[in-house]
Image 1 (spheres, rainbow, N blue to C red):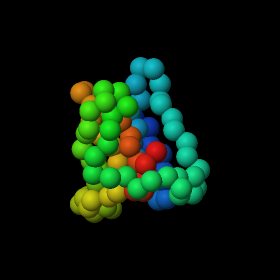
Image 2 (tube, one colour; image 1 turned 135 degrees about the vertical axis):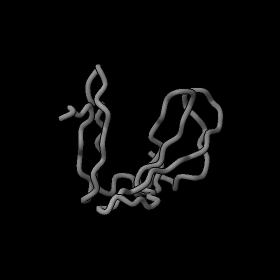
Image 3 (tube, rainbow, N blue to C red; image 1 turned 90 degrees about the vertical axis):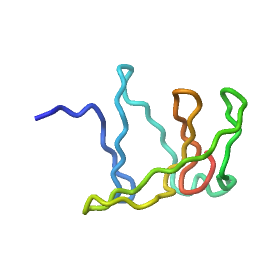
Image 4 (cartoon, rainbow, N blue to C red; image 1 turned 120 degrees about the vertical axis):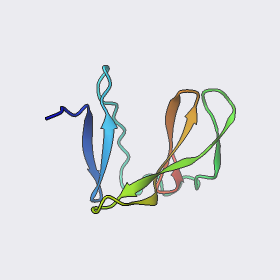
Length: 93
C-alpha cells in the first residue's frame, strides 16, 4: 500500500486534495459569504508577483463514477512554475 503525500479536506461534500510540502500543509480559511461583496473573477488577472496578465483556469469536479465535469469552485493562475489561487465560486479573493 502506497502512502499518500497529500491531505484531504471536505467542502460541501466535495473532496479537495492539498499537497503537503516539506514545510507542512499551507492553510487558507474563508467563512461562509465572506466573499459576497468581492468582484466576480474575470478571464484574466493582473499578477501581484510579476505584474503581467495571466489567464484564469479552473479545475474539474470528479464524480463518483470517475468522470469529470468542469467546476468553477476554485479558480487559479500560473506564474512561472508556481500556481496561485485567484477565486472561489466565481468571486475574487
